[in-house]
Image 1 (cartoon, rainbow, N blue to C red):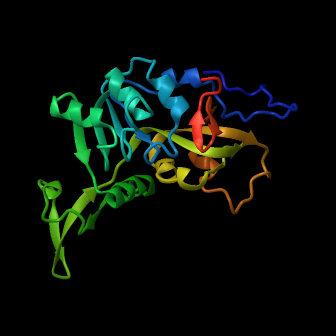
Image 2: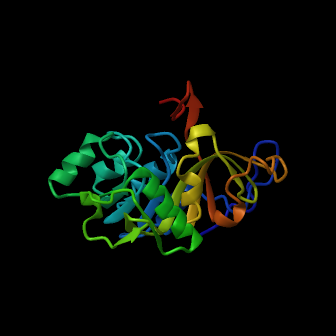
Image 3: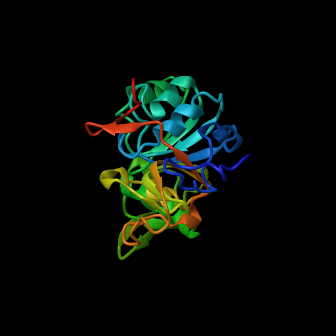
Amino acid sequence: MQHSKHLRLNGGRRLTDKLINKNDLSKLINDGDTLLVGGFGLSGTPFTLIDVLATLGKKNLTVVSNNLGEKDKGLGILLHKGCLKKAIGSYFTSNRDAVYEWSKGNLEIELVPQGTLAERIRCGGAGIAGFYTKTAAGTKLAEGKEEREFDGETHVFERAIKGDVSLIKAWKADTLGNLIYDHTGRNFNPVMATASKIVIAEVDEIVEVGELSPYEITTPHVYVDYLVLSDYKKIGGKYVVPGS
């Protein structure tokens, strides 16, 4: 894979060595991979990365995300293309196609309470095997899981989640790969940036080192392997492809 070492931004500024062409995604994701994909609803969703992935013909993917986008939007595109074997997340009814495919036996779904999902991913990034929580104790979500009693209350053991590749969305990166996020677009993205073997961040803009305040940086560059510039522009509070 050729890094974009010698490319330049408008005005002649050097682009980061971590910047790749979006089509290089084909070399980084394999059939059967587990993908951690940022987003809450459609906010903070790496639309460009998902659009490209949908064209690559990858199969049997497991996606860990809060939800599966909406019909033909975000992760809903991968579902429609038949790329997904399993989805692990909290809220699937935002896309009725997910429920339909599950009911037909075409998609495995692992339903995880939202706070538990965030903590399982955080543990994956922190090298922690798992944790006990009261959430879901006594429900169907606890069936088959180890339980222990603490202070007279039943707790369920939840294993950490780790991925092969994280696809995340940030607002800006600097040329090292430090990331900042746009308000609620932050959601699961920072924690997912810690929990996969490969982390690919889609960003709206790349600036020089020093242009981002250290107080703004949420994801340090050591977590980020590759950057891809977004095809989308934010217009009227929504991300759209210019000219569409």
